[in-house]
Image (cartoon, rainbow, N blue to C red):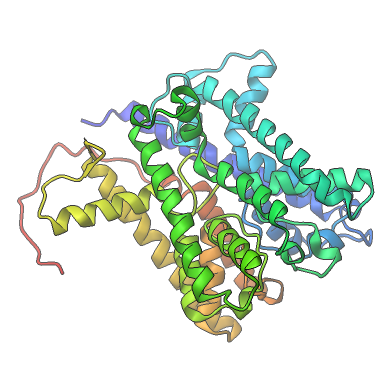
Length: 444
């Protein structure tokens, strides 16, 4: 029997998460509208400021204004601040502020935090929040130090420091915002496509951010003893490795054959890593073949891992669906994984998530295609990028109409907050003691 009190608390937790993200977006939009936020000192139209704030808070990377050339230093600080809070999680940051102020962390706040980071239980949740904040700042700091030598070659020390911090935070939070627009607007990281060191550092930050805080906590506790890891950690690490290596092999032989071998390898692995959530690109996406675009769509839909800075339907969802299919093929009654059994409700949830992401991205992509008169593959790519909070684009974002931008903002919010969070916040659970008669339906 479902506990009505617990059900109400859960719904309240989901609503608080949604409200927290909404408030942060609104505050960010107002700050970005101020004349001090733009390089020309003029007020930024609300739709443009709102789109930027949504994209930054939802760590997506789709932009209608070039970050380097349109926004002032103040505007860039606002953007990276939204990325930082959105990446770590609004609830996580809020919980740490409460703790720093000396206020007691109650049961309600702990439950909200648990839902926010997809933790399995509520015990140790405050300690986990502290780990997330400290770990994030540490990795971003290391990333900034590693990027400094690159930017010092092109900029004065203070500007190089700012560029290092900005790109380190953006990469770790899987946001995809960059400051390379002064070389060529909306060019992302294409000017560094042949720089192995730069690519490796950015990939390192993206991967660490996309693996998930729960997994890294498990790794730190059990070190290199893979057998002792929780099932989720094992699935995340193995699935992530496969999703990096296999697509990279395709890109090496299927897309970048004209490049020198060193640049081909670097670009292929970078594309494989960034496509699942980060939104940076070192090669022109408009030159990619349709099969290559299909691979990108697949990777974007999957995204990163649960409890991470990444979006998408998550690596664990893909793994559960794959294992469920293998189980069906073998006519097994249960779905085994590393000598453990996956719960039936987890499999049902994975199927629902896949359905939501596929249907929404296709429907919105089709609507935008009709509104803008653009090819469906291009608009589906944009919609997929938005709902998976990736930020990769084929160059159409800034030219879209207001209606299309609103639709993309809705997808970005859905992708970052979580579709199930939105549904659970609106729908209460029913008492499911009663069971209806069983009747079979033929499928397949």
